[in-house]
Length: 508
Image (cartoon, rainbow, N blue to C red; front, side):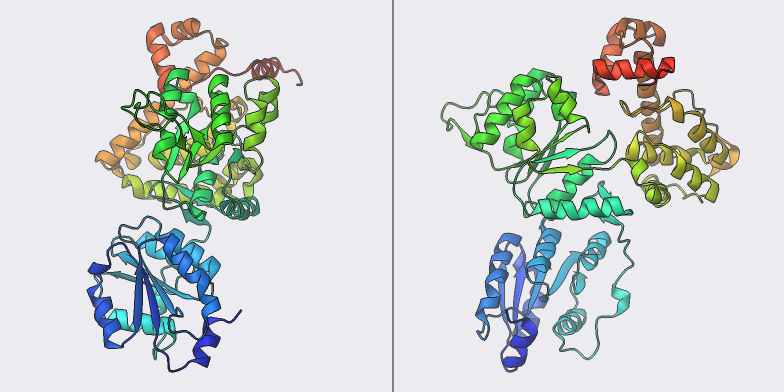
């Protein structure tokens, strides 16, 4: 297969050919003036799908006038800009690619450079910058693109959206990312297996972002958060007035968290949908077709002992085998201990920026204690711990929490001890902002504390809700409301037996 460099050498006199991926080509006046001034050929396409079609046929057209030299991907109103860049680099790694982004989207610029873009142009376009950057990408300029244009990028953190990210700081997570990249190229259902809080949703979002579907929605449905009737309406719609999530996902991904919490009758319906690749919307209009094609990719998540759930009859065997044809194992945090100091520091820095608080220095003793801790709540527990330490700033309290409450944690629920004291010092208070960011942070911590108190009371009363209400000194109805609000579900009988064995000091 001939490369672009070879073809240019063979045809030194031909004009350059640019491909612009943009939904608003009329806004690129400076680019069109530049192209016309040099008599270059320039075509436009609206999305990544069309761009991929154009690039995949180019290597077979060496010597023709429409051989591509450069692709400019416009990120404005183009949700699949990074997806386009990633796949264009995969299909044609030798092809020069530029990204055009708004000046406010510096994270997009950094991510584009990390993914292999030759450069990034920022709006508003300036003639001189446009001229120098394009010529440098094509090798026609006197000076290369200045290094200052490349902002430092943390290779270990991959942005998956505004509030979602994937941390690839350990060999286990790097292996997971390679696996995710392979699954992104297979358009089939995926089962994501991992402990609570380990980052199963982030793994699903990573597969989605790396796939050809990344320009379409990623819709999450928590199966444990809905009663049976509401969950069916959530997936398939209701009374013709509400479109279900299977329809809203379009050609994107629908992510079913805690698939074993789905009622068995609904599991059977989901299996039938996956087999037929179509479904009947609930309460649909009589004039609508009887079956609607399933265009979304289904991803589901469950706990590591999925086989036990199947044997207990909580997860249909046929659905489990249908989903697990392609599966991802998300490792628990205790298997990625070498990355815990990095992740803790990253959470502190990110949360400080989010809430407008000054970041805190992390001592070696605190980092070592974090690295030695069990973290049964995995990444979610580490993030919550970082949030508390950011607010309180008491290292002795943080160290005592890691040592004192580690034996009380278990993998069945992402709990924190309810009697941890948040001791505020005068020096800490002077650093805290009184804006909405701090109020939101305090509300989050109060909510976590309330949830943990309810979980502990339910465990202590073996999920006798009336006894738990008396213990908490609240009404029975209020407790039921809180259980539904926090999405709490009773443990299975084997889990209860294991908990009893631990309390009595017996070996399981």
